[in-house]
Length: 72
Image (cartoon, rainbow, N blue to C red; front, side):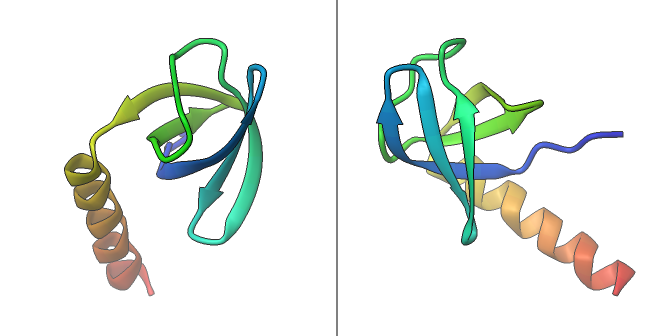
């Protein structure tokens, strides 16, 4: 099973986005969704599949932290 976690777009060059996942920087295809620098996004298989508001992204990040604490 694959789980997409929220990241923040920190740069765009054409349809290529640089996304920051809590310090882990990845490059993703941004051609499927309209994105801009500063957007919170979900990335799957190297493609941005969704943008989200800050509230939703923060809630998801908190849930993942709780899960990590349970499994640690």
